[in-house]
Image (tube, rainbow, N blue to C red; front, side):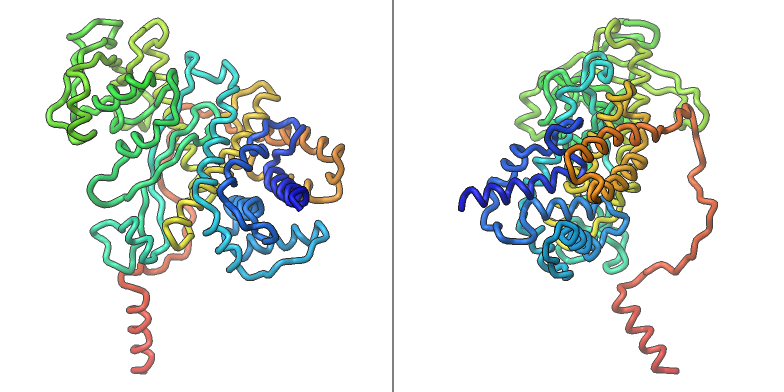
Length: 472
């Protein structure tokens, strides 16, 4: 009996691994290994005999995150087609069992596997993909909406100037993203409105995944005195932009490292809001930080001069020009979040409860990291960097190859091997054009059908419409 259970588990784990693909012995780095999945599913029991088992439910969830149709009905329909293709009996087309299976699966499963997929390739990253021998992770935040349910409104209230009914709960997710690969190594979320939440506090909850020798690339909000101190204590470097509202750069003071480049003493600010008072008193009274003033001459730039601050004090290893190029690469974090929100359609989350919303976000991150893993493998095969490869093109290629892998042409080992050898070539063929200093106005040319804004709760407007019809 135990042997048959192990065989059933192994078959379902192989089904989940072939979603991207992750089959053993194939020319791809195994991210979704059987050991990783078994460890993540160690706390889930009592599921043998269910159609929506823990290995099958993430498979359906990942397909739902990648598909253009994000509905649960389409996700269950894909599972029915999969079962029929394998000679199995079809399951019910109702979505209730699938929704209950997602609720049973712990959130830690998606989070642990997504983080593992995000760090898997970085552990064996090629030397030329690093910056000065460091793994650099840009950090940035964004905003997404949730369905307007009482549970979501309690977890993430809408902004203060929106009346109840017309608005949506808004969440503020933040992510640490690999600079060269684009994979998300950690994700967090907080409220968009209210006192306390913000990108700085969110970053401090996420940087525990970083190791000594890594680096963070951040904007002006995160490049403050407390973050500089705490990241230096962890052995993590920081490159960001000076926030002139809190501190001024005087290049006549400090140790001169070059033209418009110096290392100066930063005194502890008073008062400070975070971290808490006890942790604040434990921090040193001052710290030495480096500042470099850089000209931004490209058209469309909102600033002509910016001051980059960093904890990297050696001008020979980290030159001023190198810091300028590195800070400019922070835009890749914006592009990565745009790919997740636009290409993967995560701009509007669809689950009705906060727990399922978090699982949905982690499912998107897992799918995103597995696509980035396939892109990194294609880049290593063709001796190029992963960044020039189109994320949308890679996602479309993987979706097209899935139908080929499920057909009779790839049923045997030789057929799958041939398909997996062709897949990196197809992914690497989609390149993003190198267009430096490009700038475009944020306007749309195509005019779409416009409807009036919902300014009152929908039920109230329906009552008014009914009254108007009755009067006629």
